[in-house]
Amino acid sequence: MKRLFPIRAIGGGLCLMERDRFVIALEATPVGFALKSERERQALMAGFTRFLNSLTFPIQILVHTDVLRLDDYLADMKAREDVLEPHLRPALGDYLRFLESSVHLEHLLRQRFFLVLSWHGTDSRSRPLKRGEILWDEAEQELARRQAAVAEGLRPLGVGLRRLATDDLYRFVFASLAGRELPKGVVWSWDPAPVPAL
Image (cartoon, rainbow, N blue to C red):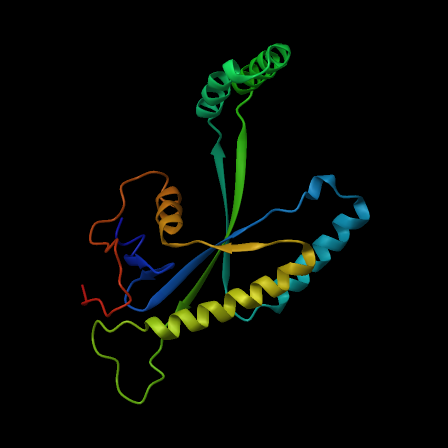
């Protein structure tokens, strides 16, 4: 597992892979492509093609599909039934039965779209890189620049981006590993101070 996913540390919204490769994950808000007219779809595809061709660095696009669990939502709605006005209770009951039957007949799926940006550090400073030294500042600056370029390229298409914070990044890594155990030797509370070499 460590060979396939060489994660050394996660923190500050960054993931350190191997010795000096840094990664951030951005969640993209999807565009209702199926609801667009044929002309709008063609324009979106042309715009996305222009965006991809304009990139000067690699990106990875991941789609996570989750089965939605409505158990908690349904339980909360049933608990609120007592505080509703009596004439609204039948409508709430119909709504809850509809949701329960929909969930049992068809699994409700949610798709989430992520862009993964990475930067492989090189020592641009005059002194040599010490073993185990982390290029934290350079990585943060370069990945912020790349994030801004991606956001600027996707804005005309109506796609918004949100950078995953550290807690969300933990969940993203775990979901990307399909719920398997996380690799051993990962520092889960990463301070931007230098981390000793493994």
